[in-house]
Amino acid sequence: MARSAVAVRASRRAGGYVPLGGFVERAPGVWLPRDYQPSEWEQPTPIMHTPAHESAEYARCERSCAHFIFHHCWSLHTDDPSGDPVYRKFPTYPYLLDFVERVEEPANTHLEKSRQLIMSWAWMAVFLWDILFHEDWANLAISRKEALVDDGGDTSTTDSLFGKLRVMWLGLPPYLQHPITFRHLRITCETTRSYVKGEASTPNAGRGATYKRALLDEAAHIPNGEQVFRAVRQSAKHGVVLNSTPMGKGNVFARLRFQKRTTFQHISYHWTSHPERAAQLYCTCGWESDDDADEPLADQFEQHVCQPTADGHAPLRKARSPWYNEATADYTDEQVASEFDLSYEKSQRGRAFSAFDDGRHTVDYEDAIGLQGENESALAYRRRYLRAVLQPGLTTVVGWDFGVGDPASLVLGQVVNEPRMKIRWLDEFEKNDESWRYFHSFVYGLWAPIVKQVTGLDLLHYGDPSGKGRDSSLESWVLNLGSASPPIVIIHAPKVGGPLEWIDFINDLIKRGQFEISTWCTHLLDVMGQYHFPLDKEGNPIPGSHLPVHDEWSHAATAMMYVYMFRWHHRLMRVDNKNAAIARVFRMGKGKRIGDALAREGRG
Image 1: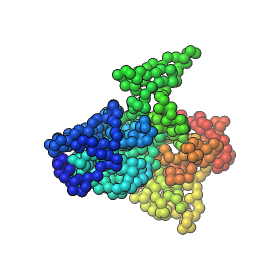
Image 2 (image 1 turned 135 degrees about the vertical axis):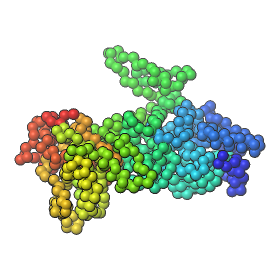
Image 3 (image 1 turned 90 degrees about the vertical axis):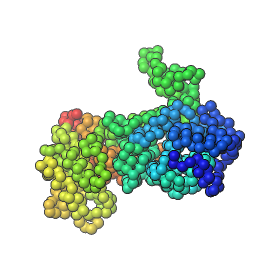
Image 4 (image 1 turned 30 degrees about the vertical axis):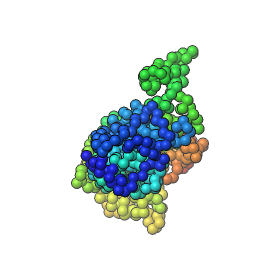
């Protein structure tokens, strides 16, 4: 036992126990909102007549996360019949009972869910149980914005993860309410020395510490998802949690969902799992549920058979309910697909590399080398990785996007199949405000010697045509790299076609299975999900022909495209399926879009 119930109650009385706002003691040890009427799904708070009762209840909570959550934790019920949000005990819905049972012990967990299933509340309830009843325990919570993790320290609101945990702590009876300090982005239980740290989803999130659990909330929506995942995978080796609604297939959340070999348990909660949301459930084929039956409504839906329509066509099979119809009325189709229907295919639009699927086009490097050793430096781990994944005898290429006022980006890949133009991308490097000398030192300090040792071949470099010009220090990247010792010769001409043609070209290669990225390349994987065409304020592509948005994802995408653009410039076809003659090249931004750039060669 981390601390006795009597000692906890004494410490709270010494500090002045203050219940959650609006709560009153309705019976010994039972604090409830005024005029509170529990629903059929709520468990009663045990009455405490003596200190012995308190100690016994404390021990039950310590032994069982489920007992603690369902008897003592409160969440904000936004769909209360009164019309106003009210605090209610965690309901014993079957999906929540299943959730607590499956996550009580830390484990790598991938949890996809529809919105409004109180899963963020549920995770914070688990985190609260962790730090109250375990000594020297550390958890980490990450979301896409800092304010979504903590919006006020000791005044945080339920709009943030830490505000949810704070409310649940305030709702505990005195004999369970350990003294806790709430500071910005850190919650510390004083008696157990356990804590929860919060961070926004920067590329450095999760580094430098060890955690029992690390939660990536709304993981599919985190811009640096692959980079953050790689960091927390090292710091919480057996307790990484990805909790999210889907957002397309180009992100770490989707990759782990469809990856065949993984250490992650997969949990899925659709809105039909919620007994109140699914009331009067029906199918678009005409089937209706029996709400009075013992069988759960979601199971009834899964087991029903849609009857063919009068004209013999297969009917549309989609779950609906009065709640669903009202909740989705003002959402776009993509938002409904993401937040309600758990559809990875229909939930994101505007991606430049829309054919890329994290589940199909990635290679897991951990199979080759495992996780980084406890005493292994990042550089040693990287060298070991490269020696393990590079294949002898294969051409190894580097794409360069030179940075003048922007980051310079390098991507490293091996040409697995030359006729089919298949590249497996293995490593990456991006840095801002550095000269050509810095990148020359990097290439010959790491990549070049290992590639030569493993493959027996020299690197081939393809890069930005603008590198022929001058940078801010009046130095030419191409000329200086080419005259350095040893030289780096950047192939940057001839150029055929514009960016849109080459985006189509690479998408076609991806569709044919001639494209792979190692999970080591966290930034490049994020690029495949985030590099996008302009969107309107509703998140829909703007009509017309537009270049992708220039942002933090552009540089690695452009570096990668240069390899295809200059290595296989003669393979770009015109719409008539004839090779584009060098004398009749397309000019930048002109020419028709290429629907099938590989009609004659490179079929998968």
